[in-house]
Length: 189
Image (cartoon, rainbow, N blue to C red; front, side, top):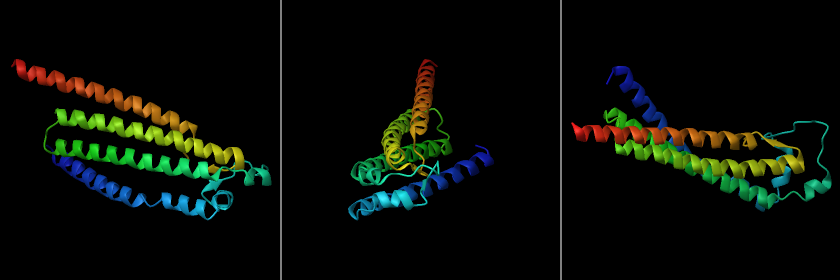
């Protein structure tokens, strides 16, 4: 393995390790949604927070819309969506870390790497579910309060997550076929 490849995979492993640690600290983010909900401040937070943009300055939410905003549904969608996202990203990071470790060991075409590719696809399924829930939550803020979350998971992100899932699934399928072909080739020699 070349020196640049060793340095690159080593750097990538460190970055992935820090990302894993960051995910564990991100578990505390949904607590903010719970605190806002139980203190009755969810709607007020959405209306006055810098985390939400007002796309058209002339539209103002009516007092009836503000009073009837389904803050419980919004909070539930955001918390479950956020947790699904964390699980999906964690699964993906762990799988990529295992693949990088195998690359460092110069074990390129192995069944373990094939299994890790399938784990990446499973992680993307979790992320797709997260995108759906968070897009629904963002739609609530747009429909009721005319605010768009800067967290930014809308319907276009759902489509993007679906396309990513298809791409990762195709790569995993092709890689698995390549590993199977290599195994058959090794057995015939």
